[in-house]
Length: 390
Image (cartoon, rainbow, N blue to C red; front, side, top):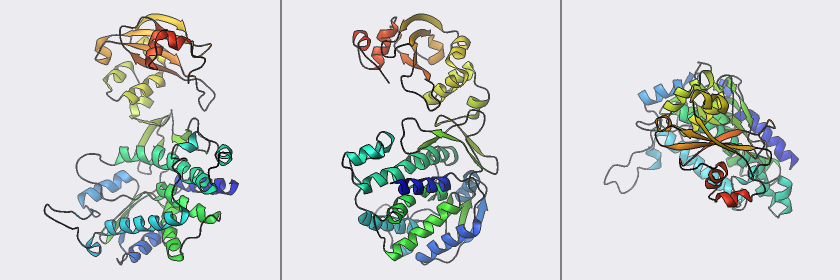
């Protein structure tokens, strides 16, 4: 199991690399993939960020999948599909064949399990070694590279409505699924067919050498890797999972200056880092961004700036040594009558501290304990009996 962990760390290093792309290796890997589908070597257009690539792809949609018109009974023949669609089909069949050799994923293990179950406990409970390796490698890397890095970058750089960004491949951020098959073979749990291993190696080369890329008809747009990535450990995780975080600048930056800001895994606008104020917080519609901005300036400063009226304080029966503070929130601030319950998190943060956070509760509550019970679906009397909350 130690070797699987080391290999997972190796792939995580590639996934978070900030070195310049190895353009010759990346272009050779793409050329090999084009050759597998019978397409000639494309012209390579290199850009410094996904944002820079987007304008090229949208202006000249190189990689649209085949379109089915009304009345079509069957899609066009695969040989007639655009390059991107044929590459996607090749990968789908490759992964199906490799899944067959590595075995079906354990329903017990699940994608969230690695963040809640230690490897030793999983093995002791009867989870097969292949399932544990899957958790240590695929699921842990998926949590970091797909969920906590790629997803916020995609939300930042690629459109979610209107138009299309074509078929995007993610280079270094595809490492989670590539590592799954690679590590299974390298620790001796499976042997892939030689042709499949060669095909996987092309994708592995791209994960080791480049950022995002867009295949097209005769042209392939390639984006450089990130130049900065700042992370912190994901709370309650056992396999080295990370999330984006930086409180004094962008969490991710590219060579052309495009950047993404994030606090404790939440993607936020730059103002949350650089100049948070109560007025900006009240104008923000996204609840998670508001919460992050308030935590950025501190709940005490926010309460003072917003001039919230203190209603009551009570000892927290679910968190010994901590208090519950209840404040009245004027309708004009949140758009509705409400009260704010300020609590201390029962779980420890990665730095050893206990985070303070606020909960919106109905405006009729005057008792902080009753308000805390409501947030858990309990009465005040029931909440008062808790030994410890998280």
